[in-house]
Image (cartoon, rainbow, N blue to C red):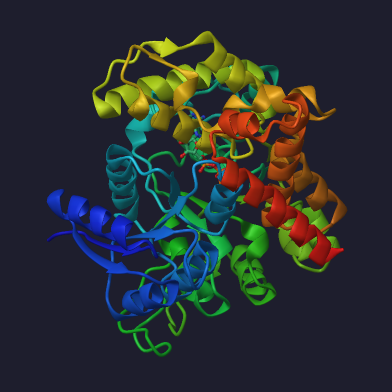
Length: 489
Ligand SMILES: Nc1ncnc2c1ncn2[C@@H]1O[C@H](COP(=O)(O)OP(=O)(O)OP(=O)(O)O)[C@@H](O)[C@H]1O
């Protein structure tokens, strides 16, 4: 049966082009020109993938994503963002989008992302049973705590060589063979799920399922059923018996992503299940024994969350048998050339291309950039650059402007990473301060423009040229930021 794709975009031309192109590639498509119409279509019928533009006439992609996930937590949603809008991309991934695609759209990239989304959706969304063979590439764990593990890239993921990476793997080596619950802290895209899978590979549970569950998008109503399953008739809409993530993971490892987002009610149920090591499907009577290892991930400090009353302290202590901090990419710069080559090799393989490497200035830009979307962003940037490259090497022309302009920006500020606010996220989490990612992004853009204008003696045409935008867009960006500042002051 043909896979069905819903395209939501207020640009009729893009809808038509995408739809024609995807039909030719064997997909069935439907289009909606507004967020509300898209949501209505999604309610009426099943789609395997939703492609949704971030900026829509009536709503933004974030709202649409939220509503689609409320209708079906397993919805596979790909958000289309502007070329330089990595902060939005990070935000929508946190909200449960499967991935993002940047504009201008490149057909091969669209196909690539759709096909990997469809593969992942064969299991429930964000859930994956790890092939045991993936574990065998490194020297395998013997199952005793005294064994010596040597981590090696399994071809799918890279390990890295910087000091912080070595420390990370030293911790994994100690903890993997035990049955301890683990909290993984790290910004979006640092590889928390990848590390959770690695821990699973190197544990005695490696031949059992690894199931990932995204708690960030669970509605209060569906949380119980998603976790523990339900029996037919348990509530309106429970048309058949359903297995929950705990049951799927039984015997193996359950990875709870964005665990700080779980409501207090479901936290109470979760605690009881973990303590009693037994659970029932919602509405069911049969009690099942629970044998799982739990790994949770959060980009918010859970200790602070419980101090604020957002997270149960007893549940926190249950999870916190061990915790690991994943460094952001900007703190493991030594690994950047390795990851660049790794992502290049992978993309060459996927696209049957043979690009040999990167121009020297490209690598310098990679090293200077602050990577707010971490490894996910890096992978996407390299993938896109490979798609756009026609020669032997990747040149700066194929990179987004925020990367090509890192150096200019760095000259004018004490903190070269201000442009992308990465530290603000963790600092804000630590201080309990609320930040608005959109405001942060707009501020960063504004500061970048103003600093560049100083650099070019206020020559706006020159600044626009360097930023690869037209003069009008440059004016609009300055104006809209200054107006919003006035409104908020
Ligand atoms: N060690 C690695 N080697 C190669 N690629 C990696 C590695 N770690 C992460 N990636 C890339 O980054 C992507 C994001 O990783 P992952 O989903 O594990 O991050 P995350 O921290 O769980 O993100 P989020 O908090 O947004 O869910 C992966 O799909 C993969 O492409």
